[in-house]
Image (cartoon, rainbow, N blue to C red; front, side, top):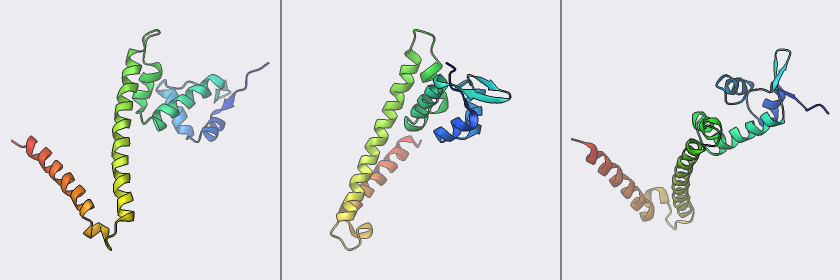
Length: 146
């Protein structure tokens, strides 16, 4: 039985990515095609798995391409230290972003239910949040000034 091969344009369409992105992944060694049909890059099932992993880590996991490369191929066989460190740092950053989004969600929910006629201008809860943000920013700036 012959393994299915997919052209670069088919893969781009199936995975919702640009052909130029797949060419770039090949250029930087992140995703090599299984072979070629004439001059057209062709991808097999293993390459499709790798592309799905790249998308998971890069897009959904919010890793840079360099971090993604380290996470999936930057290690020596049997040594997963570098990849695990990159993944752990990405998780720390993601958790921080999730915390910020939850805080923003709480403010927005309050603004939707605030009894004030004009919550953007008159809400004491929003005002307190803004006061805290400004005080924190000024304190950070003041700490760094000579």
